[in-house]
Length: 184
Image (cartoon, rainbow, N blue to C red; front, top):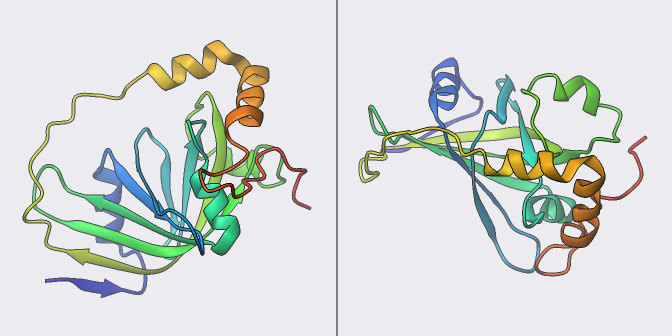
């Protein structure tokens, strides 16, 4: 029932673009696995083997720490309406922060999002679909605004202070380098 692909086909891209939620999984070489749900208009297919994900400020910064450790990432999309389907994208990711040289070019691909923390640039090595027949139906009701409102209230200085206090290390103590100098 599963099928592997070497690229994101046009059919898979249409499926990705129709989903309102996706899931991100990473793990360091030693430590806890992180699995997070993601939403908002934060995902772009750039080419058959490259995707971008805009990550916003949150309570942790596990993905950044894990990708610095070994750069492995899995993204999962599943249909909650229409025909059943699960899609996993397996790849290697790198982080682009607001002070990095590629930020200004890439951030334009996304809507203005308060609290934008980093863009993950992911090279897709393979994709896999599976049946998804056990996934229940859910009805989409809309986006939550609490995170955007929180980030707007904090403002840029407040967000950067939050990064210093809460986002510099993973729950396993790995550095995230969120406050590090620009990449050359």
